[in-house]
Amino acid sequence: MGKLILFVLAAILVYLFFKSSKRRSGPRGGAENPRERAPERMVVCAHCGVHLPESEAVRQAERFFCCDEHRRLGG
Ligand SMILES: [Zn+2]
Image (cartoon, rainbow, N blue to C red; front, side, top):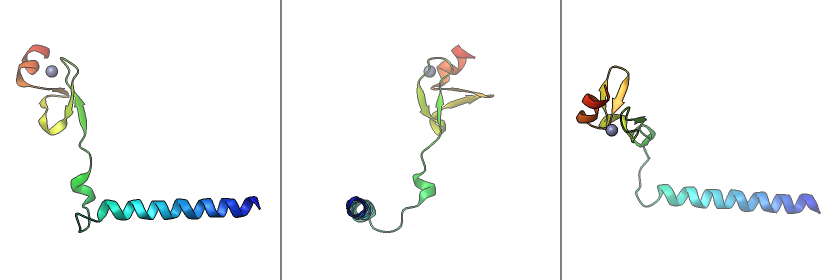
């Protein structure tokens, strides 16, 4: 009897999984591009410690800063 319950639970989980995955890619249509949607690398400002995406950070050598001012101050 226990096995039957496990089987039913597994079936429900699979059903819910497919239902939710269908919803996600449904309305927008088309295949999602995993490369485009990949989360950007986060860096920490070496001066004030704020987290920001690497593309918005000011880089100096191996260190990152949130703005040009902090780059000058925290160098
Ligand atoms: Zn900063």
